[in-house]
Length: 149
Image 1 (cartoon, rainbow, N blue to C red):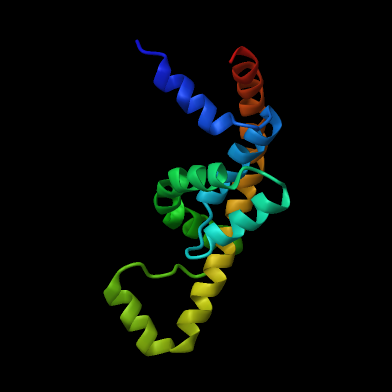
Image 2 (cartoon, rainbow, N blue to C red):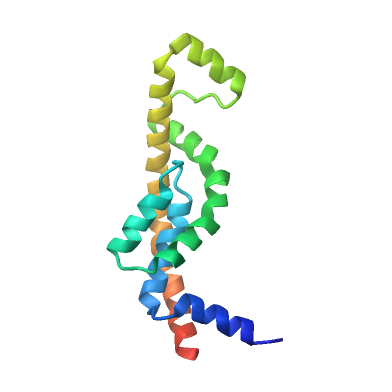
């Protein structure tokens, strides 16, 4: 097995970065990639990474790798939020959405907003312990990985 590509990969992601920063980047990126709100994750994650003085390209690349989790967990977060806050179920099918839009008008958008906020609350319940766990595990791995290299 050729070790040169592995060494190059290590250099790209660890150049001038301590294990703490790498671990924080991982612990921030994966939960942020799961956030059940579309459209501003890149801006929010960039702002947090800059504030914490993390490697922004690394953080964003990790977020983009975690984005399939957002698609996979979007509806489960919505449904768990509805159950937790006892909200009426948000229709998913286009026909149900059109019917609800015709009958409730702006009430439909109000329900989307409340359901999405509930989904974000559930995400927080998952993201905080997940981020802590990812930080602990990645710190141990990164500390050993960077010392060996």
